[in-house]
Length: 451
Ligand SMILES: C[S@@+](CC[C@H](N)C(=O)[O-])C[C@H]1O[C@@H](n2cnc3c(N)ncnc32)[C@H](O)[C@@H]1O
Image 1 (cartoon, rainbow, N blue to C red):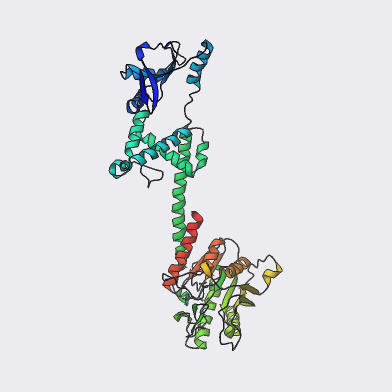
Image 2 (cartoon, rainbow, N blue to C red):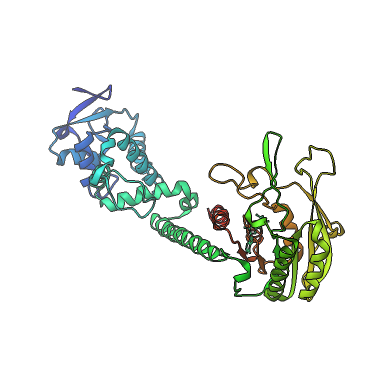
């Protein structure tokens, strides 16, 4: 008798006509899952017999079919030329059919599950699809698939789900496949999941802590909790003018905002006197101060610094390689900004080369992606300082773990650089809009670091 299985014709013979002969396998083991599979899918592989109907291989399948009440069974007829060849065939079937390794097994299950869900997508939906997951919790595993598979393998649904999750996790953590046993791999994975959760919590705590270091207030009214090794001040110094012009297709404004207006020079210098004195008190016994300022008030500021206790050391010139152009051609382009350097006690002065000690630094004003934008994609802050310049100052005057204070933080360039260089910092900024921007800038940075 012939029958058709997937386009291939096999012989069928009566089970009672098959002579089992000598059986190399002592025990047939539990046939439940094999019977379940045959019930659902039929006999996928025919058994092998000789022309005389002596069984060569497939005893478990034969027994399972018998127990299922089958009368006939699909066979392939083999023609061993002698007893030796016959015994080789029997041996081959029984010894070379190695069970899958745990790695192959879980990957195969995941593959099967994917195929099943592609075929029956509705089984992934709704409450029937919800299955408990401790790895990749956003993904659901088809309940129907795990149910069928569990029955086939005579295991629990939970164990099938666990295998699938392990296979998925191996894509992210290939090192899991090195585990000798599946149970070891599962233990390792649980540890990885826990440490990942901890990392997320730690990063949230770190962000919260950092946000605590952004003080949204007037510096003059702020009480500091610690002393600072380095203070960077980029204060308003009253250079705003009601001017606006177009250059290279973009509008350049000289009006930086209300924060940069003072009624008179006296008012400006009084403001400087107050914050410079307070900064001296907030500084550690050995500390450095960098203060951005305009050339118009340089000498006044040096006096104020010295009256407040600071020792003035030098004025650094920052040469901007891309300053705002000057169209009227009546004077020189303003391409320099000045940074007063003063100290208290004997602070760190850490430089790698003589060139780094020059009181001159050259770099463009903040451009491109570094320039923060508001919701309308407009420049968020008119005087955002370049990271390269601030990094230069921080590296020369501080080391890891030092406390840095930026008392007019704007977009938080100092805090941002301090964070990347593993310094502690406090940023004070009076404008809530800029405070929010500092928070966002740091959160993005911390997130990128922990991802
Ligand atoms: C020149 S900007 C600082 C820019 C900053 N260096 C950056 O890279 O973005 C000065 C900042 O000081 C803030 N400010 C003005 N008066 C303040 C005060 N009394 N206390 C704290 N911040 C103040 C302004 O809102 C402004 O954002």
